[in-house]
Image (cartoon, rainbow, N blue to C red; front, side, top):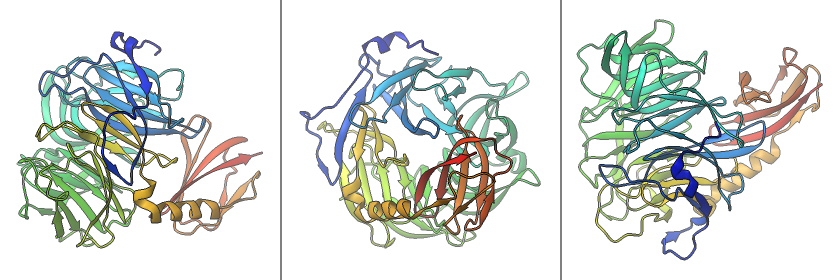
Length: 458
């Protein structure tokens, strides 16, 4: 879809060193902005929402950036020189909210602003272009948030079409069996018709949903795939620093949940012990050096390190290995303005690309490509050691491959980026008789580490 809309005629990518962005243990690699992007009509910001996508076939990394006018697809493979590849214009050009996620080589784009729609986009043609599959889904009008887990798409605060009727669903789940056209499965109201707590955002693992339920607090649901229904496991509705429960992230070992309340401003971060999902308990609450800033979106890159988008304080990294005594290990203040605003600065970040770079999106100053390695020194060494130790043998191979890692999740991707085989509990021979001859990308993931390897079937 090589039709970059008119404001992008002025887009460029550049590295900014002269402007004063204070930091500790986090280094700026480059910045990208859509010069000429218009501010939204509510808080006059330019950007909202960032996600990353790794092309396993072409070995390239991309940022999906939300702007007031639409969505931008930026190649960040060269971390020092981000390049705009393509864009998709939104229905409404003054959006406050934009979010995105990916599944295989598809991206799902949404905005909670009225007059916007849910888009499905094919990414496999990048860096040349993206192809819009659908600008209007048969049942999804739009949503506030979205999350992909395994082969399902979860939507928070969905505007839902049911024939000629448009209704609000607090949270819905869709099948991605056909990723080009997600299929509706269930919503919370189907099982709890009296539920009035909108799910502002959710973190999902193996169909266990940690639902940030606005002023209702935290609810933990299980989506029962066999019965196609939601079941409440537990809730946490009264806790220190409670407000508008906004977002959360789960450690890889599923023991701790980091949670943020957005309203009123400056509420503390919470670390919740969810080792027993039936009885979540607050371990601790803490602020960023009492700065008065508001935590917005948390991301966990291991059981140890939390990467927080902290609105006007920018991006902040914490060591939470001792969950009762978190330690700040680094920060990058992407919002240097002296004004005392509550909801400006870093909207979100994406710290999961294989290269280790972190994408931080500031609502005014755009996309920051950051190196946080000095803030996570222990983790970086561990990941490098892990990748070097992972061996696929034989390679090339004809009918089976051995992977020398136990208790890992392995996904094999074809040349189009689609998952053709998924395996757990490795350490034994994996049959690939059903795969065609060719080159495949293999992702090996444990609780704390990920390795990427190439496999040749001949």
